[in-house]
Image 1 (cartoon, rainbow, N blue to C red):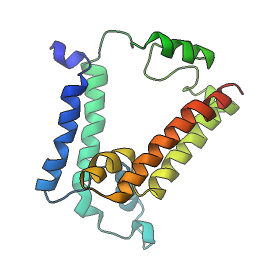
Image 2: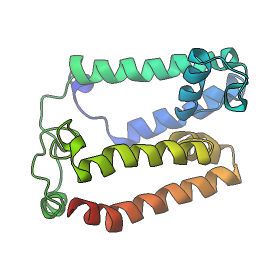
Image 3: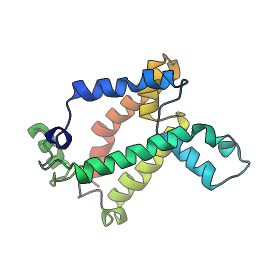
Image 4: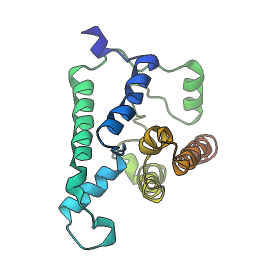
Length: 186
């Protein structure tokens, strides 16, 4: 039971994720990614003739099942097989977070930022609402998410996925080192 309550090392989880690619190729070259699930859900809930929703979502129902499995797996891992140990982060990370005004390390997300009361502050609104908009817009603009492009797209040797992945990393570095410190000191 200990193996289910502890984080798994990269040399186990990495190959498991990597084995998804041959499996999906054997199942008929199914695209791997999560962001398309929102498109499927919208097409189910809002049947219309609009271009964005005009396609056969039933052909992609496997992706919805996969997404439901991720949500259920996260619930099971977070509530049933919960790791009893506190989150462990390095001393340099703690120092960096303290400089940004984050002092609570008890959860996966800093409670000083990600809670309903901070949503009503300028900093919280920018990080949660504006950040969420940019994630959604970027996913749609890039025609896929980080998992779809970085895992499946690069494995299929798709140049657009390589470009998108480079842009994801560049955007993450710019956000982490330049934009986030400015927002956190508002």
